[in-house]
Image 1 (tube, rainbow, N blue to C red):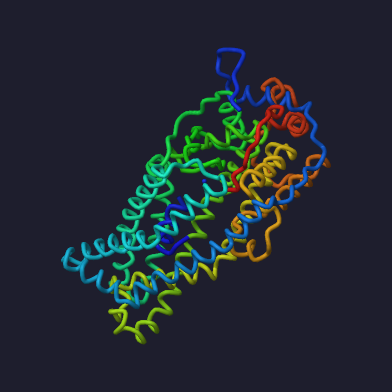
Image 2: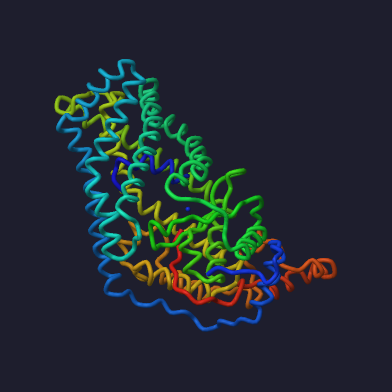
Length: 476
């Protein structure tokens, strides 16, 4: 990710086979889950699923992706250095002062100019990375017109975000030169929460159409699974993503009235129902296990560390090269590329820690998905499809895992799906306390409490026998 987008991205980040009924009556979620789990009780998938070797094409995609990652990070350092040491940032500041006149408007104008200039500098690399390369490897359906439209819309979002964030940072720099990094980080927390509230409603629909689920049986099963996971009041949306990509995705996000369960149309078309329910169990795990608040804390700490690193090191650079860069105080808005540069270096250094924490949360979500569905075979085959369709490398090198892998390698996830079955030996489940029991109303009325867990083991399981079709599984 190039440095222009880091701050806006941090805010937005913390901001991831159809069927029909024989009857015309729509099933309730509870009824749908009860019926499907009874059908699934007869299904037995004991054989372990092997992680396939990466294809030659997948290995090329992996290797060229590593090179591209290095290029992008080097570019993220070169651009701010160029803006600083050519004096271009200082000239943009002077222009912003002439246009804006007053301090606040001048800072906003500079933020807009900075965003437009860096957008233009990044555009060729973005075009190659997001459009040319994805089409070259057969991973994209997006037309050039749609890519241009989405890119311009992303630019508008960045303009709005940085027009709010940059004046806030420089307000604290002006009022508290020694503690600006702390107050800016504290102010970022409610801003991140606000973005998480409004992004599902206002930002995501700018890029794709969100509509109701077409498959009402599947919707009922998902809502039943959500009810069992303790997620109440959520709505299920189907997103028209096939116009852009062949990848698949599903997620649960938002708070309160903005809470929603989202599936891309690609995942519905390419995964069978059992695999879909595991995917949804995984995504619900993120929500139930509090990974959203943890993500807010993680992003806030990264912002704090990045800004503090900038505060501690910027003075030396300004004292040595003030004549060349055109400013001698960090409160001068022309210092924005310097702050972005130093923050980007810190983020790169801290990346292994952030990636390790993210992998831990993803592993917890995998465990949650397995425990709530108890369908190891469907989970493993979903990961196999992800690897095959998404040109994945099941066993990447340790450097890749350390700096780039926000999820456990696919091979490790398949191995875990094959081996994790504590319910077979009556071992305690890590998240059993979070699940509602899965018994019919009649069983709840007559079964003693001690029998509830035994009944739950009997009736919990995958949704329906697998339907044919190839698929990929979202890693998040």
